[in-house]
Image 1 (cartoon, one colour):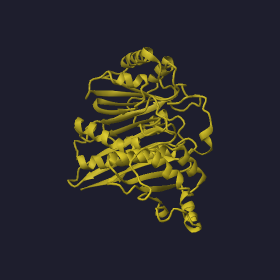
Image 2 (spheres, rainbow, N blue to C red):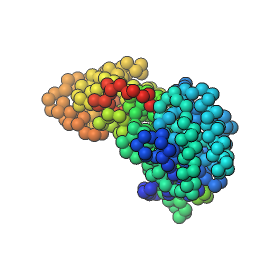
Image 3 (cartoon, rainbow, N blue to C red):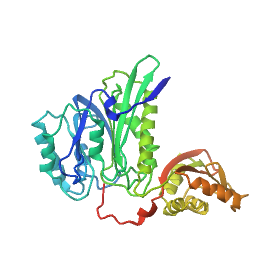
Image 4 (tube, rainbow, N blue to C red):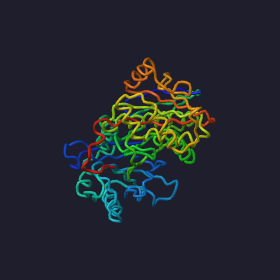
Length: 395
């Protein structure tokens, strides 16, 4: 058994890492726009990236390394995605690291960027930040603010995992993301640090598994960006590891961060869990749940607090999964809104369903009555800003 203890101050709880952030002028408001995460001894790395075919230069640069490589430096910037910049974008990263290496020895350095697509990095500004870095800093707030763009609140979380043998390890994460979130990742950067002595194979396995029910299960506006990145970094400094306990903590962190992304969706006012059960299998349940979280008709119903179950049923039917109207049962939380014997909402049930939809968060539960498949996806409305045309295509 084990206990999970919530901690304040984010990454500062994890042993073996240094991190901070500075302003270089990439952001015009003077806030931090360049950050770092580093270690004196190389840390292990596991990563997941966007499924977008136009992956940004930092991802291309990362993939040049062999599987299972170790690094000692992660450089982060906002306001510029360094995406769709071709070979020049990758060369710019090499040039930036060449300058940084003259100030501190680098081992397989990594870069991660977020911002506007199509522009090359301003090397002069980024390099100017190197002289401002305090490489022995441990400031979770500073590095978190360095990756924020349209975020309305800071996203960081930390836990101490206490085992029965009176030993413990720590795990913490920071995240950036507020829009374009799709069940193939999001407009997001998320970095999870741990001092657990976890094997590389477990890092890869558990990171892959946890995304299926967290970052790959959320949707805001249905788009997938070019820079989406999830990384798990381990210093191993605690010398302690328990796979079951680590998986539990990792799953909790990734789900909470994913829900924070939905909560912070640009213009969103509500977070809704779409639980599909009774599907023919897991894949069918996932397909139906994600169709609901992406549906524009459903999003507008959520925003309008309209308990019209027809949009839910229509979306499930259109998703292509095996289903039968005679078996379908739909609840909003614990309020029955549809089964074959109750196809019409009477005044009392309609008001109760409407009251559920007025809440900031709730569940829409759809039982297909076919099999044992079950999956929950998470989505939101997009409010009045959904029709807003953004001048910049952000990543």
